[in-house]
Image 1 (cartoon, one colour):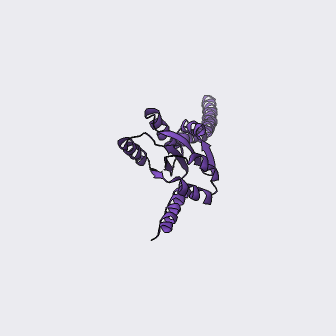
Image 2: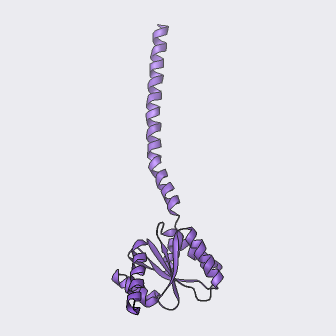
Image 3: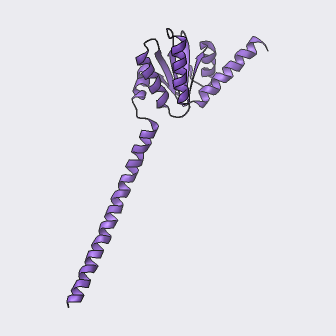
Length: 174
């Protein structure tokens, strides 16, 4: 297998990762020790996030095939990409927290679906509640009107019972 075929295979692999991920975060890992990168990979992997050191030129080719041409500005220098496959907020939160604890990790930018995000936008995304919290809040909002409806219906039934009880008492006393 020639060098060209190897590169084409790597581009296809990067493209597959880009297609399957809900969010990607492009980082500069320059200055991190091997142990720190290993800790970061384990932390991300525990949450279903893939973290790979990539070659910028091959990543750019894959990104262009997907219409993510604007990623070029973030593909400079040593680059590693975190691919989030489920909850788009979790990978960003983990990387922002790790970057606060380890000054050598810097977040360059990324993509959420087809939208290119800069470092500031990714930090804002990291402040969102997790998917589970948002689902719980949504469920609470959906439940609230139903609880109110049940209370109203119970009140009508309770009032009907009071009226029937009053009628029964009136007939008994008469």
